[in-house]
Structures are given as structure tokens and as C-alpha cells.
Image (cartoon, rainbow, N blue to C red; front, side, top):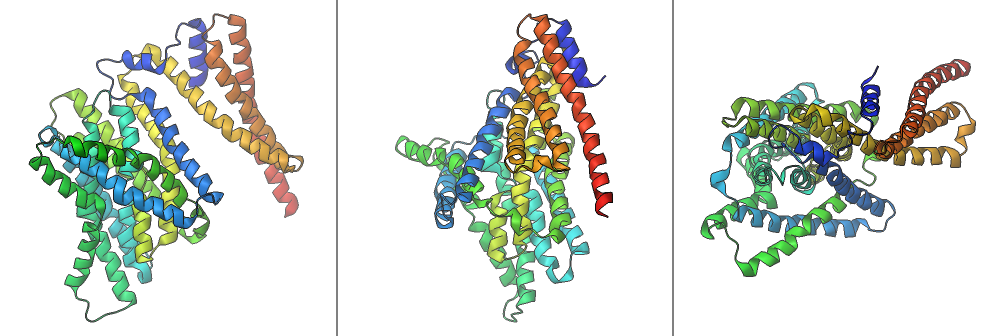
Length: 475
């Protein structure tokens, strides 16, 4: 019997008594909950909803490329510097866990060096240095402010608000210490393509450092720390409202701009670049989070076991944040590896959403009380069913309107989609019917759910069998 069956049978036997919300689960943990997991799904929906709005606006040409560039300039040159300056001024540096920061630095440096060395060994000699410069930056530079900050705020604001300040301290790590090395490789590639005897090694290094200090993140971090000491960690009243107005506009405008930049990017990718792209996304979304977590586990000297565990979990979630749009800007500035970097940015952004959602739940489950955990899993199934219903309605509409459902193998696929639709619909009904003490209704929904669930197994086998028969006929 699978886990979902056990979950539903346990809930049936409890006659609807185990129907607590996600907030109830969080409140029944042993000690303080490590994160506000009940706020994660709304935060993800908010972020990716704004990104999709930007993508639709760009795809429908509601906002032109010139207008999108203007929005990007506003977000990066006005809103983001104001956000950084404000938070760096009020930052309490005495309350920072520095072991966490250098653990993240070591983890990022390890991934950066590994990707760089591997690229130099296996890449085409003609473009070896450009790949060795940009690929490690892609694998280590996260979208900390536009996408990462809202997620961290949703998860940790109530229990560990100081974790929000680590975003502002961790972000410059890769920008000041790792990115210059990548820029040096890109400058070497430019020199190899257009040899210039007057361009010395010091000049190449100077260009790389200049790109670092031109970045508003690096510049405003230094300015903010200087004013932190000068103003005594307090922003003057006449300046605070001005900074708040600019800073509050960053998140929405940056996410919307991110959606605009995604238009048409994946269509540029060549089939020969697929393997490199797959390895890069694996390094960014799977390898980096694991190394970040292990480094914090190894190096953090926090005496509190609860804080130590929450920091290591936070490090893992930080590593899952997708690649930053700034990497695509670097690729366009150097005019190198644009197709791989831009396509990777788009794919990693959307792949990171389910990884963050599942990872947060897996990290939270050990601290939950086993009894309401069944109810929590039920709520997760409800959330996933809602998202799946939207996708299935879209897919079925395409098959029906195009009339492809009349032909093989689309006929079998349409039936598979329909069966899966019934599964998701029954799961949504189960979330409501379990709150009532109607045993007949619970049994009816249970039968519909599992009849549809097992029919999806049958239709999947029929799809494979039908496709193999169709291939043999064509051959």
C-alpha cells in the first residue's frame, strides 16, 4: 500500500478529526518551528505570478524591448541601491553569525573552482576561457534580492528575522571574491580572439576589477557600511521615507522585468548545448545547496542545536535560489555563451520553484509532531492538485481545440490527462469532504480518487504500447 493510501485511510479512520491547517502543524512542533512553512506556497505563487505577468506582457508585445530595458535600469540603478543602502545602514553587525557567512563563501568557492577546472579540461579550446569564466558565475551567483528575499521573508520573518540580513551580506561574496576571476577568463578570451600587444596582464586584471566596482550591489554595500558607523545604525527621518519608497518598488519591478527577459530565450538554445546546460543547472540547484548545508554543519560553532539546524537548512534553501539575471547581462556584455546562459537562467528559475517547495517541506518534517503530519501532507496534496488542475485544463484544451485527440497517440494521451484530472479534482474534493463527518461522502470521493489514480497507471502503459506499435508500423 502506498503512502497516499495510508494517509487517506488513517484520515478516514479518524473520522475527520485530523484536519488541522498548516499553521496548526507549525504550532505543534517540538519547540519553535524552524520556518513558517504555511507561508511558502503563497510567497512562491506571488513571485512566479509576477514573473508570468512579465513574460505574458513581453510575449504579447505589450511592453517593448526598449521599455523593458528602461524598467530594468530603474530596478538595478535606483530601487536596488536604495534597498541595499537602507538595510546596510540599519544592519547590526554585532549580531551576525560570521561562521555562517564564511561557510557559504567556502561552499561557493568550491563549486566555482570545480566548475571552472572541469570546463577548462573538457571545453572546446577555441571557447575554453569564455566558458570557464561565465559557467562558474552561473553556478554560484543566485537571484538573492528579486526572488530570494521574498522567499526568506515568508519562511523566516516570524521566527528568525535576522536571517533576512544575511541576504545582504552573502550576495557580495560572489560579486567581490569570485566573479573577478570569471571576468579575468573572459578578458583573456577577448584577448585571444583579438590579440593586442599593448594590453598587459595588469590591464586585463584592471578591467575585471572595474566591472566589479561598477556593480551597484558592491558599491552600495560599501557605502551602506560606511554610513552604518557614521549614522549609528539609524536612518534620518527625512531620508527614511524616500528610501522606503524606492526600496519597496524593487521586488515587483525586478520580478516583472525577470519575466520580460525570459521571452524568446529558450528558442535560441542549440541542441549541442543541452548537455552543458543540464550540468550547469545540476551544479546550481543540486550540488551547491548540498555543499552549502554541509559546510554550515561542519563549520558553524553555534551552541544552540535548534539555531544550528535552522542555519544549515537555511543554507540549503539559499543554494536552491536560481541563477541571477545579472549573469545573462555579463554574457551579453562580453558577447560570449549568450544562448546557454540566458536559457539556463530561464530554466533554472522555473525548476527552482518545486525544488524549494519540496525541500522546505522535507527540512520541516523532522521537527513536526507525527500526528498532524498526515494533515500537513493532505494540504500539500491539495496545493499540488490546484497547480496540476490548471496545467491539465490547459493541455486538454489544446488537444480538444486542435482536434488532435482523434489521432494516435494523442487519443491515449487525452485519456491519460482526463484520468489525472479526475485524480486532482478528487483530491481537491477530499480536502473539503474530510472536514465533515459524512462517511458516505468520504468513501465515494475515496473510490473516485483511487479509481482515477489506478487508471492513470493503465493509460500510461497503453501510451507506451501504442507508441511502440505506431513506430513499428511507420518503420
